[in-house]
Amino acid sequence: MVEYDIPAIIHVSTSCNNCFHTTGAHYLNADTTAFMQLLQGDLFKDFPTLRFLIPHGGGAVPYHWAVSAAWRWC
Image 1 (cartoon, helix red, strand yellow):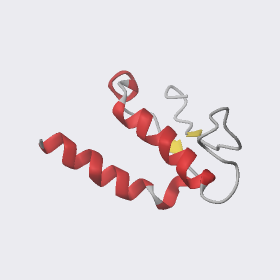
Image 2: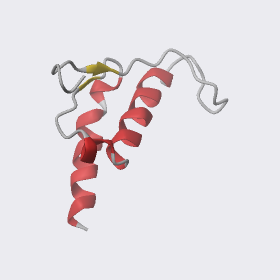
Image 3: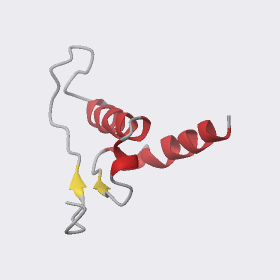
């Protein structure tokens, strides 16, 4: 995907984890969980130009991006 400059999409539809229910805030929470796991992992060290589309979690991403940036200052 990086080679062709094609973004990946994170689109959660359900979960095997019983703590995530599939109604209400599930979509925002699940997409945000996936996004945060990617941020906190080392995926971007190997693929720094990798891009994602996050349809449901878009509203929470700026908040978490700021929190992640703040962690780097600690």
